[in-house]
Image (cartoon, rainbow, N blue to C red; front, side, top):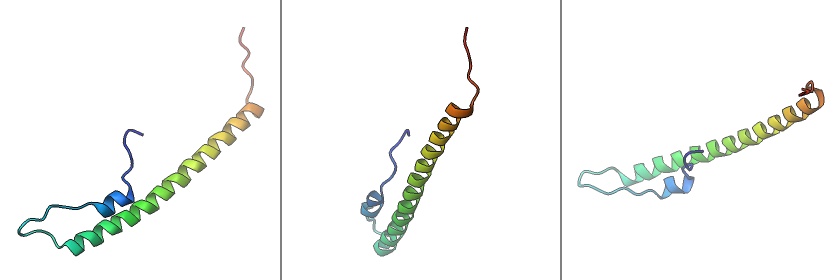
Length: 74
């Protein structure tokens, strides 16, 4: 992985500079929490997918070691 995943706490704790005509802080905080919640779901799904991928790769290696034809090199 070329970059680190954005953590939910980074989203929840993100703060922005306020300007004279800035954004509604409550609205921004609500949106950041929504994004963080969605990230948590996606991170969990990604972890499950990686585990399943590792399991499938292992099963394929096992199958190949039992049933794939052997290559004899001279």
